Image 1: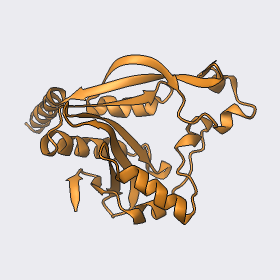
Image 2: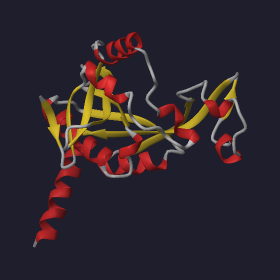
Image 3: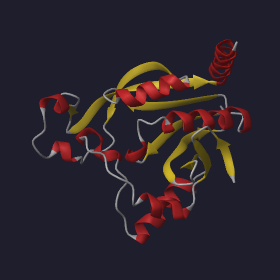
Image 4: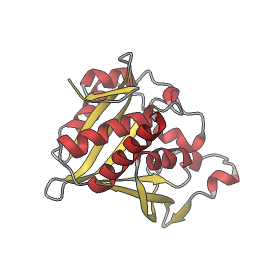
Length: 210
């Protein structure tokens, strides 16, 4: 059962069989994005990965399909604060389908479900400052940067730390007590922001059709 549908994507609850399909995804070629590659895992590891993503009360995961029904990504909301009605968003796409509007379409479709069906009040996310592509996608969806802050890099054992790396890559990180840190943009959207963005889009479409 699909919880949301966009023009290019369909979103539903994540199934165990989806994890097997993700094993066949293509890989990122840019070193800074290697940690986004979906890991190769044996069956037991895939079972555990699925359990971690789906069984916790404060986390919900969803598969992203294209119109043809292929699983091209997944998104999740974590650290769900049910009393405050807010959570953190995360999204991962098969690199083969990036830069084609699928991420923006999926997020916009999900936000409608999130704010109208789940009746949440706010959603936030974190993205590395060097990930310009992701920031533009989130801004297009209506997210606004509320602060910039250094956090521990998601993959402390990334290949880029253990072999010769171009200066432009290394300068993205600082090491504090042996921990690789990088600057993140913390972005947020409220239900009010979402309603305003939807109304503005509707007005724009109406004007373009006149």
